[in-house]
Length: 239
Image (tube, rainbow, N blue to C red):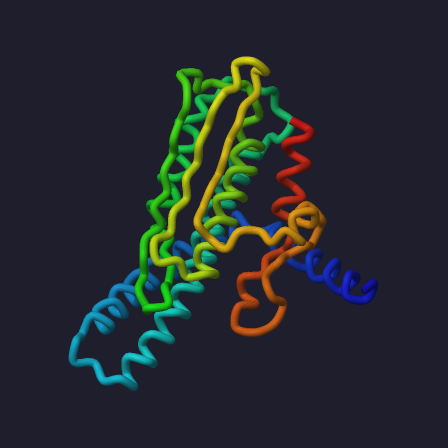
């Protein structure tokens, strides 16, 4: 209803005000908290690997490890998003020659470096298998690198979120690029084995503030701003 929509708008405004200082906040966070997070995460892995850990202690440790996983989710998001903002510093720059394969591989390498994992139903941390498949020999396009990278980053982050939501045992993301020589069109296909999109939601995914993730309950933290697909569609149509 209108009241709920108004509340969402105010919420998004507050989030964007916070994002205005993202560059400084991200650097400060990584400098002060990053190394300490790594130490705690390593110690937690050692604790969980102890076969003599009591049932109650393991339950507490797994809960703490889940919290660490939530923190890592935000580290990954900030890292990729901040890098994308750097690429978009001059959003009105002329279209440049881009090696599409190299650009996408660089993005996947960044994601691999921060090691996104899926916490499965069996309480295992499984690394996501992210691959790039290029069809044809033409790997060069002319476009605004920052804008294209922003769209692909958003879609890959959506895939990661989907895989974590369903706690997939063998999480996979596959990016396929192809140039249609007949129409001279670029085709980028991003696939994952996450939860997919319900038929009833397909027509809604480009609406501002729409999200299929629950607002309340234990999985409410998966719910984002609901603007990624809206902005991605706008970028593609305007590019």
